[in-house]
Every structure is written in structure tokens, then in C-alpha cells.
Amino acid sequence: MVGVPGRSKGCLTCKKRKKGCDQKRPICGQCQKAKIICGGYAPSTTFVPFRPERADSAERATGRDATALGLRLSPTSDSGQSLNRTASQSRIIDEYWQIFFPNVVLAQTSASLPIESMGSWAYVVQEAGKETSFVKTALLAVTLANLSRRSGEEGLRIAAIEAYSASLREVNLSLQDPRRQQSDLLLAVIKLLALYESSGGSGGSKSGPNWEKHSMGVTRLLSVRGPEKHTEDLAHALFLDARYQAATISIKQRKPCILAEREWMLRPWLTRPKSIRDNIIDIMLQLPAILECYDKAIALEESSQEEDSARYLFFQLCKIFDAEVQSFLRKLKIGIDAVLLARIENGIPEDFDMRHAFLAQTMAMYWAMAVLYTHTVQLAFQHFQISVPSPASSRDFFEPSQYALNIGRSVKYFFRHDAGKMNAHTFSYPLSMALQYMAFTQEAETGGYHLLTDAFTLGDTGSMIRDFLVSIQASASEGKINSDPQRHDYEAIRARATAWFTYTKRPSRKSSPAPNPVLGQHMIMQ
Image (cartoon, rainbow, N blue to C red; front, side, top):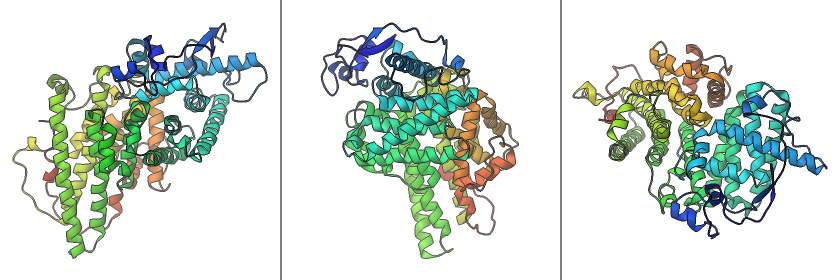
């Protein structure tokens, strides 16, 4: 059946929940009372008969020509063909996104999705795509890129490029209009374009840099809109997700970003409390300032007054950072069941309940942050030749390798079939950080390293994440490393690690015994 304009006036969310809508604008009373995202208003639909081509799932669709599926964007004057094309596009999008966001789809059939949930923005955007061609074209680009990757179908690949190009043109036009710059849907479409790239849309070495450009574009657009514009509904959900990408890019560039400023840490939460995921991303956003300070300190002349000042500032920042980490761990123990925490203390087991994916993702982010932070502190002590006493007992301190091993033990959980591709995308940063650390420290022969590289063998999702990480790392080294996606052996990963950990390019002082980096010793759940 195909939708055509009808008379229903309720918001999209109330219609989905089959609730009576009071039609208040911009947010209806039902959604405001339930503290869920209001999908907004659009013409409803009545239905006329339509018999689509048989397809039981999106995966079966990958073997057919894009034109036969009605997925090409070329215009037609025949209204019946236009309806057929619209129905085919909507069906393929819906079916594929059930693979990408299975937990979100499940939430649609039972209860509305809380705004803090992973993927909540995608749920609302998918609904908006049924009514707005601007969004639908971007959704179609992501869907077709993934289907063409699975099938190798050239027609699907071309249709994906057409949809992506059309979305880019519309985004560029929107950015020139001050009124359209304030649209939540513009933010959503740019995020979808970034998702297109992280799914391998452009292919080869282009995907990583293009993903980074789109993600940075989202951050710049957030800054133009201001923090007060991101307190409610879709705008808040988009902001929450964009913060994670902004933090990872800022860490990669080793420079602070605007979202680390105080007003961006406070104002978007004026009407709601922060979640533990929000707390760990707050901490991640502070890490680039420490990395930047460290880089500046070791670049200065040895024993100079400028170096002393920079070194003092570095350790002061570390002291503040440690306090923030301790606060996060206390909140974790207070807010999360002790039995649940005990299960994931040393990694996320494969059979961990997918209903707790939010917690699993938060812990993976924490471990990735801890790998980089504790390793940076180790290097700082070595570089500045500071001797410190050993910890009172070994249980008081975790080596960075322990955090990396926790990430390795979590691979199978995040690449479970019922986890959806979204979970794997969220996990790509922790996975990459652990890989870079183990290769850089020459721990590639350990079992933990092989737990990490096993992720790349886990079907289409594993190869997709592998190709994306290779393209990201190639961009970090300005294309000077081998970007062959099949190369994930020790020497190749180590070469990429050298590019990722940019401080390895700095001149080092004369060698000295490596002291114990006690500044990281509290970063453990006790």
C-alpha cells in the first residue's frame, strides 16, 4: 500500500504509539509528558492498493537491479510508476534500517524510544524521511551504499552515488539560507551523509576524510545554532550523538573543540539530567587539551622556563582530569546495579543482554579514553625523566594494556548480529584505539591483539569497520601509509599506529628507566 495525503492531524510519534494527540506545537502535550521525542507534524496518510515486487528482506533485494527495485532517482511522468518507485524506496529503507538499528525498531513496536537512547535520532529521522524528500534522499544514499557493498551490484552503487550527490547539493543550498541553517533536519541529513561515508560509501581512502569533514561540519553548524537550540527533542538527540564524533575527531587532531567549552557542557541539559554516557563524553572532550599541552611541552627546549611552565600545566590538567574520572566512577557505582557492573569489569561478554547496550557502549568509551590517557602519562614521565614511587600494590594500578584487553574481550558482543551495524560503528573508535596502542607498544603477539583483529573477520560488518579505520588512519598520516584494507598484519597496524600517536614523531631525550605513571592508578573500578 502507498501513502497519499489524508486528514489525520496528530504528531508522528502519537500516531506511532496510537495515542490521542493534543496537537500542541511545536511539542505535543503527550510527548512532553512522556519525556520522549515528538516527531513533529506532517500530513498523515490514507492508503491505496499497491502490489510491490516480492521481497522478504533487504538482504534479498541486493541481488536485483536498482532500476527494477525502483530505486533510481531519474524522473518519470507516469504517476503510477512514481508511486511504485516511492513504495519500493520506502520499503527498502525500512527493511535495511531494521538491520542497522534493530533495537530502535523493536522500541517502535512496544514503547516510544527515550531521547537518551542510542539511535533515538535515527528513529525520528526515519519517520521524517517518509514525509520529507530532503531526508529521504539521504536515507536512501546510506541504504543503497550498504546494499551495494553486500552484493557488489553496480546498479545499486550508482543509485547510491546519485542519492548522495543529490543530498550534497541540497545541503549546500540549505547552508546558504540562514533560516534553513536552523533546521534540525539539516543537521540530521549531514549526519546521514557522514554515516554514508563511515559505511564505505565513497570507498577507498576517501571515506575517512569525507566522514571527518561531514562530522566537523555538524560541529560547526551546532556552534552557529548555539547551545540553547539543543535542549529538546530531535535537536537534543542529534547533539548527543554529534558530541561523540566531535570528541573522537578532536582527540585525533589533539586539539580542543568548541563542545568542550563550559556553556556547551551545561546549557543543552537545562531541562534534563545527564546520563553516564554524557558524563564519559564530557571527560573525552577534555582529553585533547591534555594532549595538546603535552605536545607543546615536549617541543620546547629542555630545561627552559617555557618547558617548566608547560610541564607544570600538563600535570595540573592531569590532576583535574583524574578528579573527573573519579567522579564518573562514583556515579557509575551509584547508578548501575553492582551485579551488572561485575559482569563487565573485564570486558563485555558476548551473551551480555542487548537491552544494556547503552552501558556497554559507555564502558567501551571509558576504556578507550583510559588507554590513551594512561599511555600519555607514561610517556610524559619518561620524557621528563621524573622518578615516582611504585604503587602500594599492583591492584591499585592498571596498565593501559589492561584497558585495551577489555576492549578486545568485548569485540564479539558489539559485532553480534542482533546488535545491528550501529553498535559496531559506535565501537569502531575503542577498537581502533586499542589496536593502535598494542601495535605501538609491540604487543601484537599477545592474545589480546588477535581478539581485536578478529573483529575484521566478522562478516560484512567487520570488513566495513576495517575499511573505515584504514581510511581514517591513512588520512592521519597524509596518505603515507599503505591503505590496503586487506593489510591488518602487525607491521601494517604498527605503521598506522605511528601515524595515529602523533607524539611518536617528537624528538625524545636520552633513554632512562621507565617510571611508574601513578597519575593513572585510580582509573579502575574498585
